[in-house]
Length: 372
Image (cartoon, rainbow, N blue to C red; front, side, top):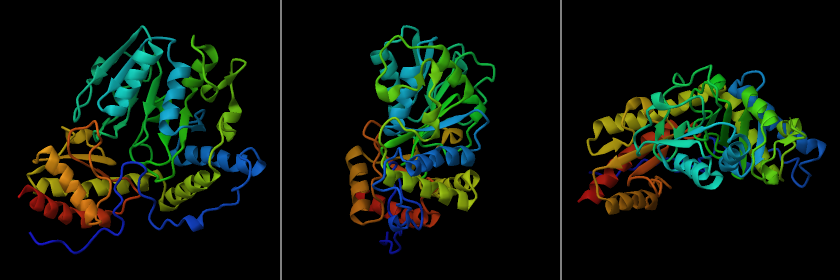
């Protein structure tokens, strides 16, 4: 097979940090808050805008609150679990490594007595009919390391007794989410919007707020996890008064990404971009019998973290990814370390469809070079 000549203009297909938005230039950021306190009037205004603009663009229901919190999506999930769980039983759902990590935290760290896990292997998803909604339920919407997503929210009842805590870091801004069925949602800036790392986003619905104000967990809570004072929600946290010191440069970067989203037409436009990107890979997989989606069913196929397996031994899969990197056409596309050998190509909205189209011939070429 002849070596392709056209290369992706941006070969960044990492699943986090993800590619910056098209046309991004750090020199174009509003840097007026650099060197200023995040507790200054300007700092609080910008952090508050991170919350209000997120809520507006996502179309969150009335009564849902948004906060900027420490330690990326991981910090947001941990805040939710350590602050909310323990009031009733909990069902932990996992079908990839990050979901499995939350299982470990609940089972081995919090050691909740009435906790059960529902697990599925890579490429599969749990049987949602087995979920007990008298319990709290913790799950990822999109398995970043498996490329397996929740197909819809129909399995979540409106009259559930427990809370739903959803790690949606590689789904928010790229997939339709049924907000009224989700009581806690977490994500990070560096995923679908291509922002910078360090901070997470925590979204609480009214039922989660009610739990916080009516239940105190029996274990000590570190300062960075505390969301109440005197038994009441610390409302200032959801208005830009962050618990720790954020990077104001990263704040400016996130606001730039939100403005880009708004300018494109909002979340529907970003979903459309991610879906079109997935279609490029779907067409390629359909035409090449040696490459396959890790997700077993089309309905659970992610349109952000697209995970693929190849008809090659593990060492040759790694060699293929290394060859593509050496050619400067695809960076950071090896499968996650705990996942089956393969490739993981980020298809979120910050990736241009033309770059994926340019990559596909290189993928076919690299396979022919490696398999020989």
